[in-house]
Image 1 (spheres, rainbow, N blue to C red):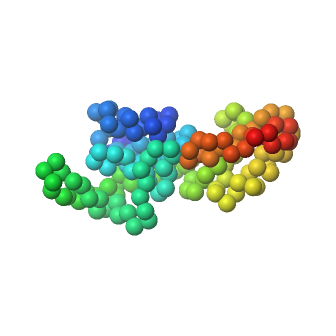
Image 2 (tube, rainbow, N blue to C red; image 1 turned 120 degrees about the vertical axis):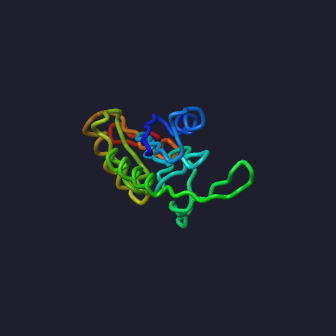
Image 3 (tube, rainbow, N blue to C red; image 1 turned 180 degrees about the vertical axis):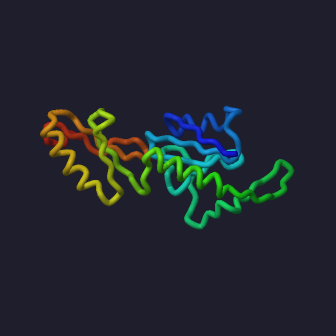
Length: 161
């Protein structure tokens, strides 16, 4: 039965997938901080539903989780069904608050005050954060959660980076 393993970063999850004997084929790797989840497929984690974070491998829309091709050490090909693992990943992601297509996150460091936006909502998020930084008198950082890079920094209602 597949298990869910939670990590601080996708890099840490990828490293553990290669070294931690408790992580088995079909297990789910979850990284809340990068808005990412993956299923361990034979030798590497593969992102589920585009939740790639900074390090999980992704696939195209035609990926069939019920027939994932496996290559054996002797060159033989096999097919494995990861559908149950994907359902577990989706449930775990839902419980963890991951939402599809969320790309940007804004915060002033308080875990209770985190704002998120989809790819097409960056302008609206920056506008809201500008107002929040004026009211709160604190700095707000807007980051692209796919790569962790700062997109904008606001303080006192002004964009400073």
